[in-house]
Structure formats: structure tokens, C-alpha cells
Length: 363
Image (tube, rainbow, N blue to C red):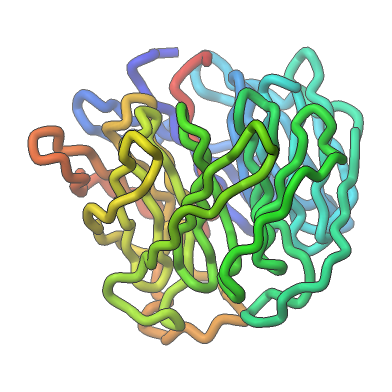
């Protein structure tokens, strides 16, 4: 595998499904389609860890199906194994690399599912099903019950943090004993926390809310095992709250930039992160549609936005003119002279694209 190339994987979410492979050359800023693999169906999300690509999809009974694939030297995938699981449609998957644990957040089943990871990278036995029985806040759409939308691993695997959209809270767990809940941080009523990221060197966690389109900065106090809310910032710059919903959040590997996407307003908001971990608004860049996934490359110089083709957000009443989105990939770069992210002009239209990941060689 050419270590200078960045591999991009985009999944089509439909009954047949397929995965499309691309390479991106950061030197020439050229994106090339390399091939497709008709091996996936109804894919909700993908993630990559240690040269293994993991997917969350549905089996023939419309239950969770988790798969693992080894990434080959030419970027193609080799199936390791598949595991049918409890639940209906995990919206987010992640890996505790240090503890060798696969984590799935099942929005509809109100649950976290944890599996051990085998020596070959495959998904092993189920370790735990953590089901939440709280009452939803019932303030905004999709808040009728607990709805874990995303989980991240922080502090070398010692903690897990889950964003619960239905209960407007963050749940902090012991990474060594995942069943051990350490703390719950309540966020703004009706916010609907969606996705979250951890600062690469500081004890800070950042959360994007789906309903209120806000970003929350939280300090992780390791001595007392709890989270402290430090900042709440409005992400919307050109629209009202009911005209857009939060999408994804990504932090650059150098810890200097935090980006958050708005679906409807069709923007990416860029924040500067100071040496304490606090955020300051920097700028916005326009997207061609609904940016569902944001990913930085390892140099922090390129930002990849995966655009979803508008499917149906059901409970949200977003104006029709803001619901037009062509699925695909849009790539931005950091102008280091002026310290602004700019559009590279690179586009790839992919109808019904939904899940996305990048890979830069063995990690």
C-alpha cells in the first residue's frame, strides 16, 4: 500500500448495498475511484482500527449484523467474520483499541453492545448488553426514550462516553469495567446530543447536538471521574434552529481545529482550540449538501466531508428547499498561510451514500 495515499471508503445504504473504494493523493490533490465491493447491505456506519474495517448493517431478519474486514495492501477488503446481534440498527460503532473491545450504540434498542475483538481483528463473543431504562426528556423530536447515538473511547481506553440524544445527557463509563457507570452530565433540555470527539492531548470532550445545533465543551476530571460543562456555542450562522440539524464533529490530530457540520444550513463551522481546550469561533465553509461524516487526515491539512443524499428525517420539519442534497464526497484543505480551510474543488457524486471512513496505512 502506498503510504502517501489516503484510502477512502464510502458505503451505499440500500437493500443491495455496496462499498466504493477511492484513493486521494494529498500531493496532487487528486481523487481516483479504485473499485467497488458488493458485500454490504443497509450499512449504517463504518469505522477502521488497526487495518480492520468494521461495519454495522442489518441481517435478513432486520437485526444488527456486525462485520469485520481486513484491509489488503491494494485497499481491497477480505472478510474476517460476521456476527448477528441483539438490536435493530446500531447508528454508531467504535473500538477501544487498548482494551480490544468493539462498541455499538443502538439508537432504537436503547442499548450499548460490547464485543471482544479477536487476535485476527474479528468480532468475538458478546461481553455485555447495556440497556438504558431512563425516561426521555420528550422535549424535541426523537426524545421519547433513551437513544444512545454515539460512543467514544478516551484516555487510553480508561473511559467510554456515550451521547444520549433521547435523554439530553452524556454517560461516562469505566473503560475497564464497561458496566460501571461513573457519571451522567445533563445538557441543555431539548439539545439532543448526537456525536462526540475527544481532544488528542487534553482532557476535553466536545459534543454536537442534533436538535439544537450546538457544540458543548466538557472537561473530563480523571481524579473525580466526572465531566464538567465548560462551554455551549451555537453552530448556526445563516439559519434558524428549526431549519437545520447537527451532523458530525471532528477534531484535527494536532488538536488545533474542531469542525462541526450543519445539515440544512449546509455549512461546516470551524473552531480554534486554545491550549486550555476551550473553543473560539473561527469561520464557516459551505458544503454542497448534508455533511453526515467529517474526517481529518493525519496531517490535519485535509478535511473530508461525506455528504448524504437526503433520505427522510421523519420527525423534523425542515423547509423543503433545505432538504436537497446529492450524496458524495467533498474535500477541504487548510491554507496554512492564511489559516483558513478552503474548498479544494474535488467532488465525487455518490447517490445514497451514508457511511464513510478513511485509512492511511498500518497504524
